[in-house]
Length: 295
Image (cartoon, rainbow, N blue to C red; front, side, top):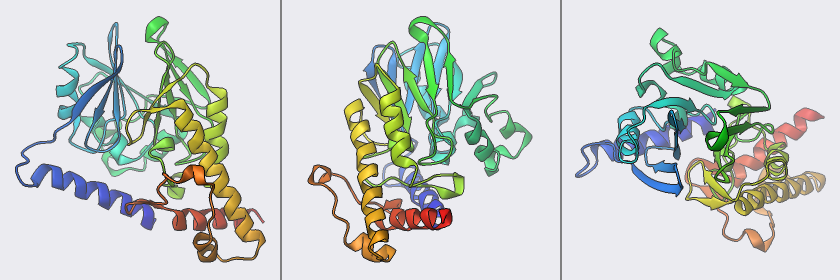
C-alpha cells in the first residue's frame, strides 16, 4: 500500500508543479509521430497514443486527471476526426485519469481485471464516472477494427498489475506496452492491484515470443523503444528473479539479498532505484513474500 501511495503522491506532485510552477499556466503536452497515422503524446503521466483511423481516433491511455483538453488539443493538430475509443492498458490513475474528460458517446476497452480494479477507484464511483469504465473487456486477446486500422489487444499474465494489456497496431509494427514496460529499470509491482514479481519475467518474455511483427514500442513512460528493448527488459526481470531465488537458497534476508545483488553487466544502464516509485529493495521484498506464500 505504501508503494501505491508513493506513486500517487509523486505523480500528483508533478502535476501541481506543471500547473502552478513558475511561468506555468496550463497543462502542456507534446505530440510526435511514431509511424504514419500513429502518434505519441507525452506529459501529464503515462505516454498516450493517438491512432487516427478512417472513422475516428483511438486513444491509448489518458494520463492523470484534467489532461483531456491537452490531449485533444494535440490530436487536433493532426486530424479533425473525433475520439471514438479509449483503450486503457491498466488501472493506474496516470493512465486512466482523464477518461472522463472525453465527450460521449465513447467506447472504453480494457482487460477484465483492469475493469475490476478501476471500479474501486474514486473517480469511477459516481454515475457520471461509471460511464467511463470499460464497456467491453477481454481475457486473453481481442481484435478491433480491420485492414490497416486493425488493433490487437493481448494479455499474457500478471506483472505490473493483474490486467496489463499490450496494444498492437499490426499494420505499423508498433506496440504500446503500458507500464508492463515503463522504463529501463526495476518495475513498479503493484501487488494491491494483482501485480507479481514472480510472474513478471514470464509475462514479458511470453509476450516477446508470442507477438510477432512488432519492431517499435511505446513504453508506459520512457521514450520510443524497440521490441529488442522490450525483450531485454523481460530478461532483466528473469535474471533479477533468479538472483533473488539464489539469495533465498543461501538463507539471506531480503536486505542481504538486495545488498549482494549481482546482475549481468549488460544491465549496467538499468536503474535499480526509479525515483520514489520503484526500487530493487521493494521488489526483492515482494518476491520474498510471494515465494513464502507459495510454501
